[in-house]
Length: 107
Length: 120
Image (tube, rainbow over all chains, first blue to last red; front, top):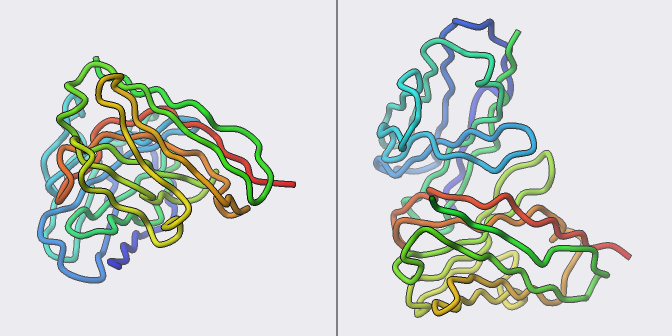
């Protein structure tokens, strides 16, 4: 099983600041990596797939990068509505596995 | 608009059974792989089962293999998860989600989930 490790576990950021979230895979997943946003009481929402392709209707302030084992989700200018837990998912191999999540709090 | 609506969750005793359903609209249902992903409240996400559009290939996580059965009725655009021999650690919010394909695919649409509580 591929283990996905996200860092940091949580962070507190002021509106307008740049946010960088990391996700590391225990083995090469090429670019088979997605990012999800989960707001309190809601289902996960797809942000990024293929490591860097934004899903439909996702604001351009969200961007993804990386390949192989190291990936990054960047929020270029944090908005108050971006308060959420962010998860990465590798879908290169079964079982498809999620990271444990990064909680983003807005100061 | 793509909609996924889960139902069938509830409180069940250890060793009991539940059948979850997911009604899907807005897509050609039989074309797509469907999955069940669960989440213990406040915890992470686990893909527990998946099934191809035709139903000929399935996947089960080791944690549920032999106890859960995934199926679908393409004539009714509905996905099912039969859960037997339930344990306390099966307690979670169960999401139905759609994948683009069975292999090398992310989950693009999700329902709002149905809560399963296994407790005496």
